[in-house]
Amino acid sequence: MFFEQIKTPGLGCFSYMVGCPLAGVMAVVDPRRDTDVYLRSAADNGMRITHIFDTHVHADHISGAQQLRAETDAVICVHESAPVGYEAHKVKDGDEFPFGNAFIRVLHTPGHTPNSISLLISDLARSPEPEMILTGDLLFVGDIGRPDLPGEEILDEQIENLHNSLYGKLGQLPDYLEVYPGHGQGSLCGQGMSAKPSSTLGYERIGNHMLRYPDFAEFKRAVLSNLPARPRSFSAIIQGNMNKVPVLPKCDHGSYALEPDEVDEFRKTGVILDLRDGLPFSAAHIPGSIHVDASADNFLNWVGVAVAPGTPIVLILPACVTYGEMIREMQRIGYDKDVKGWLKGGVPEWLDSGRDTQGLPHISAANLRTRLAQTNPPVLIDVRTAGEIEEMKIDGSVSVPFDSILGQKSCPEPQKEIVVVCRSGYRASIAASLLQAKGCDCISVLSGGMNAWLRL
Image (tube, rainbow, N blue to C red; front, side, top):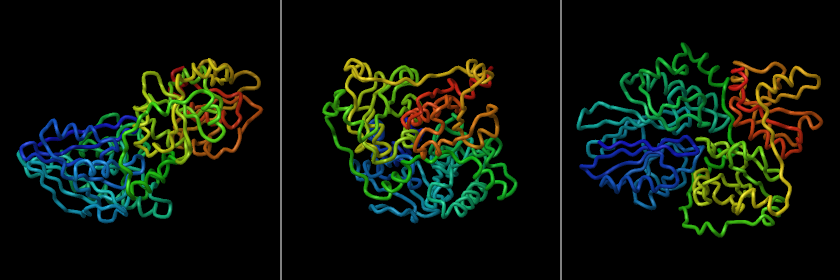
């Protein structure tokens, strides 16, 4: 049996290839939108892609199923309850699919979405018993999928489905079964995931706190207590994945290079999205820019949090990253039509044109401790979740969850010095750039976040 796990940079997503080189056939599970990696692997291993499985209607990325079907003529398989408007083979619980020695059986495991499925995988050359399970967004390594994405009106039903799928359906499966999830650490489809790409059901029953609650009431309370921020892109992505996804075109990316005067004019109607590391952004950026550090594994999720779908965007590219590479990343979350180009020459070119820049200072934990002991200390805005703050906080800090920052019409404390705090400094830099764009002139970021604060 052939099996390969593929990680998508920028999202923390996993997709899978399952097949049999002897039979020359394979299936792809939860493909990303840019499909070269699957086509290349199939060709290298002498197999033909005949089936594509989406374990659910995805919220965090545009599915590559329709793109891959256009390139291979493979059959797209989704659960019979999935409300898709394109041609697909509808599967149900217990359906089986042979691919030579590789064998797939469908389990309907609702909870993350009503149409979620998991896939039991057997290697018939070894045993007809399943060897692994692809859990989609039901069960992660160290956590479980969030149930709130399909909508508030069915949240209670979804939590009950989630409990039944995890404790009931998966509870009947053996400990030795290998678990391969749809996401890894950093995804906003769950919280507190491990950096490990796989696990076993037995170990998750020991080490995953969400599988250890004695009753449904405690499980539900835990689920609702720590839901991560819901990116503004998720609703648009869900709608996109329920309909026909355009096939990606071949573009001449050079025509999207913009001069400083074009970018300056663009600022009146769109957003400058600065994707550089935190320190270069801190030193100098175009006034009003939104900062999302593209070096993080899950940066695309945070783009979806910070910038609403449909907003015209111009990119400030990180060092050693081309516009073609970055637009491919943006296509994964459906923002390809929103991106209008990139600043040729970056911030140095902007500076050479004589235009103004802003800075976003970083303050060390030691310096902040000193400042808090003085008269007129800064206002601390903590953008972490309620669950994170409950575990540890800086005395006197004000909880302003990230979602609330997005809804701010103006600076909350325009006359005061503000320091923005999160766990590592990553979210704080995004939030501080949003607040700075709303008029917070005296604002800084706690460098290293609570991680640094706790080391003092």
